[in-house]
Image: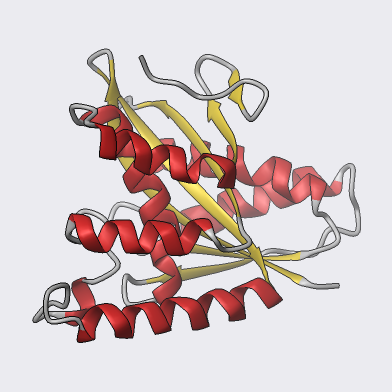
Length: 223
């Protein structure tokens, strides 16, 4: 039995003046996790030592909205070469942030739990004052019990709160950053290319309200 590590982050974006909450989950194995950490630490050192790209506040590097375009492109090229899988889901925002968060994260996790039921999942989510760990744990427990009605051997997932100092928090942050940018900014060529560079890593995008599933045979496209 092996571990499956998943890292989550959330964002808000608009489609046709409607506001949505979206989450990205990035999934990787024990082996992939070690490799990616090493690659990212090396890249971070390179960026910090570059007099043109480094920042006075080193903790700022590897945060999509804070990084310069040059840094973004370096990180994107790095991540697209890694062995990982990304799943994104979104739902129209209706005011109860925590409840909406629960609905979207469990939508992503349910299918992944079912299809990888022999793995122990370590669910890493970024700390957020609007997300209460006890309530999120309760939702995770409900999802686990639902999976066990069809996969009784499914091991209990582990819930882990992380900060932006965790180097792997860059994973969902960057995939969501390009997804958000694809919707919320005038789509200059480079912004469109950022999303396209990640397209093959994104296995599934789910429009929960519309019941739509986007994948390589039904690509996600914003006109």
